[in-house]
Amino acid sequence: MSYITDRKRVDGLGSSHSGVGHWMSQRVTSIALIPLSLLFLFPFIGNLGAGHAAMLETYAQPRHALIATMFFIVLCMHLYQGLQVVIEDYIHGHRLRIGLLVVNKLFWGSTAVTAVFAIAKIAFSG
Amino acid sequence: MVIENPGADGNQSNRPLSPHLQIYRPQITSILSILNRITGIGMALATVLIAWWFLAGATNQGYFDVADGFLTSWFGMLILVASLWAFWFHFFNGLRHLRWDAVKGMGMKTVRRSGWIALVLSVVATVLCVIWAM
Image (cartoon, one colour):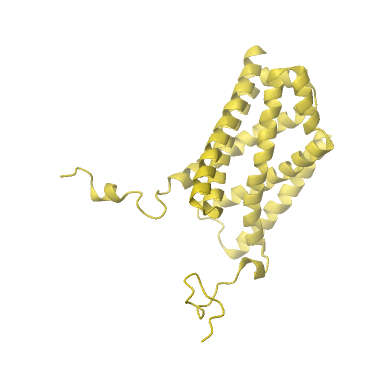
């Protein structure tokens, strides 16, 4: 006898293998990016080409370090989610599809970690 | 009977085909829809470049000058300004999408108008940012 309900047993067995979780998660990151992208953009434009010292001074401030950290984490999540859907839509070969999905995940995961590490190093040594 | 246009199973020549993308008249709705994808994919490059800029800044002065020098070169600027427009377009068009998710602004007239507004705003915001940065 199984204790799993009928509903739970068939969950995820449809052609999409999942429900609205991915879609909803993409909306959450997009909403978070509305303030984060704007808060990140203007200090970044101001520091581009302004020299190493100016850049270190800006991102050593907790305010800018936190904005940049949160921005990169959510941005990389959003890119991961968006590109995942693009791969799922256009790549049909099974091996290539699975391979690209894994590469996509690892790539944006490592990009986020790299950016967060770099910003943290600047923030903690400034 | 001659089978002129076999379908996937080679046996469906009389089945009407849905019009292919290439012969559809371009419409503001479809163009902006694919632009949302293209700008999203395009911004992947700028994201990696900016992460690299931070990593170089965290490393040392010499490495930072290399990264910052590349991003402020004509080629780097070409990528960044294109990405800036991509950002503003994706931003304003994303707001349209979030409105649709709330089942608002979905009439055909409204959809076309908000599309043009997003497109115009994206160009205006890009120009203003470039002027401000100079």
